[in-house]
Each structure stands twice: as structure tokens, then as C-alpha cells.
Amino acid sequence: MRRVLLAVIDYLLGFLALAFFAFLAFASPSPTDERLLFAFKAATPVAVAELAFLWWRPTPANRLILGANLWLVSGGLAAWMQQWWWLQGYQRLGEASLFMAMGAAGLVTTAFSPAGFVAATGPRRPVVMASLCLLLAVGVALIAAMYFRGNVKFAAVIPVIALSWLNRLLRRVVQRQTASATTARESLFSG
Image (cartoon, rainbow, N blue to C red; front, side, top):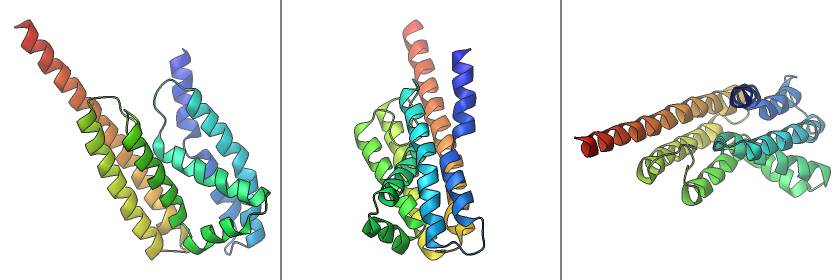
């Protein structure tokens, strides 16, 4: 029962903090600096709650959500502490700053986590290969964010959705490879 409850909460949370931020920041046709500051300040507690939930759960956390929430928390802390230089960096980079945070989370987890960027349990080689594919896709999303800068739909929303789908696909590929390898090993030793 606990496992089902955690799965439902995990699905519902997803990119909740990022969606909340986007709603607050971009609900009007032209976002203002004040609106962005408010959005960062309001979305930060949601992002911290998501990070706490991701840390608490037994399965590896979705690294894309981890990167997005770290981006939100650092922006929120900068807004609360009036670190305008940090927020100006976000402003200069636009939506690309989000994908830079996701890429940083991806590099660190690919290098130092057995589950890699795709958050899949399995043999190291398939995990690393899938993680590298996801890192490449984040790089493509970063380029798209720079090209479509200012158009939130094409610079952020569509790439985040595409990355999320790709992450799920790559995780399933790793899990299938792991299952196939386990089945082959069992048949080798049983026969």
C-alpha cells in the first residue's frame, strides 16, 4: 500500500514546482521582473518539498525533476537574499538556465550515482549509455532554449515534456536489458 501511495504522489508531484513557477511567472502575456521574483519566491517552498520527497523515497529520484528543483531553489534563494547578479544571469540565459541545471544534475549523477542520469537500476554500462543519451538530449534542449528564447512554449515546455518522455523510455530500455541479461544468466546456469 505504501508503495502505491508513493507512486501516486510521485506521479502527481512530477514537475509541480516548475509548473507552479511557470503559471505564476508567465500567466500574463508579458512577464515583469516583479512577477518573476514573486514566482521564484512562491515556487521555492514547493521545490524544497519535492526535493525532500525525492530524497525520502526508496527508488532513485527523477534527475530531471532534481535539476529543475535545484534551479528553482537557487533562483528562489537569490530572490529572497536579493542576489540580483544570480537572477540577472538567469535573465541573460533565459530558459537555457533551466537546462543547464538539468545538465549539471545529469553530469554529476552519471558520474557518481549507480543509477545514473536516467535513475535506473541495472548494469553500469547500459545505465551510462542511457544517461549519455539523456545528456545529449538535454544539450539539444539547451540549444532549442537558446534558439527559441522568450517563447516559453518552444524554449521550455515542449523540451521538458520531451525530456521527460525520453527519460521514461531510456529507463525502460535499461530495465529490459537488465531483465534480459538476468534471464539469460539464469538459463545458462540452469541448463
